[in-house]
Length: 197
Image 1 (tube, rainbow, N blue to C red):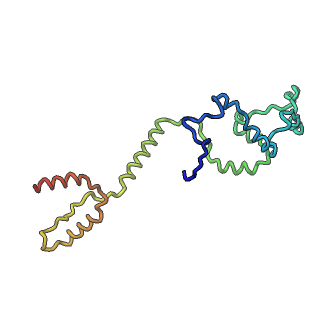
Image 2: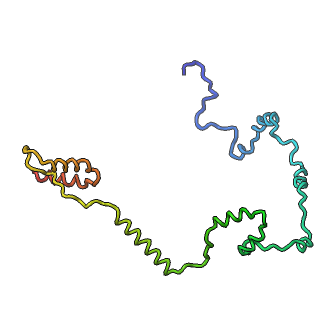
């Protein structure tokens, strides 16, 4: 407010009254269309042709010459058994000689014929048991060490020197102390504090 003159048209008390009385009047107001009309005309966004019928799309598939088959065509065509219903031998003979070399390669790769019958459940159980036994045996071969060793880390009284074995055990304990959990530290430290009192 450094100026002496103030534009009072911009100052109002309470809610400013808008150009429209209610929502319906606001929605019905299309005065903004005139602003955009020039821009749309400039860029040609408005479709001047409107929805004129263009029959060019009807000619799209004329060059394919698709025709509906006559009833006589079905009688003249040879009957072909679907591949799914053919046996393997019939399918091989119907393929022709042009793929003879490829067939030889396929037969080499195919291996033994696949058996479509369900195997004997007793044999399946026996095989599963055998696999389980092998797995258990291979687990037993894993080296797990000879269990926890009694390592003397306390040693003798202070000031008299320690044996070499005790020093080695202490070093081993220091190196491997992260390999096992150090649980209950807080509980044990509280017990020590209580014993001192």
